[in-house]
Length: 145
Image (cartoon, rainbow, N blue to C red; front, side, top):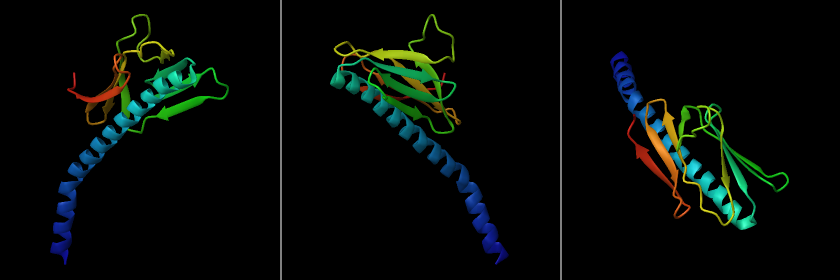
């Protein structure tokens, strides 16, 4: 009985790192898709209601917020624990690194060509990029710097 328990403990001990890495990967893919959907919603809302929509990206809090001039409209996307916003591209020349970044979606105008780079605890990177030509977000894997 002790031998069987020892073998089972060994199997669990060896498979835990692989299972945890798999969960981290699933969490990163899911977060990238959520951010892409959130960015798409900002552009759609600006076009549908013909109102400017402000996107605030807060890397320190790991949060994205949408605001519009419509009374009471506010949407928030909080990133899950273990995933952070590493960068918002292109870099804001006049801004301070790590401070919230504001992007405006204006109805009838070109979608801002921004990208949000995400990183997890294991160092995996994903970039969610808004294509200014089509207005659609694209999620892509990025090699660590």
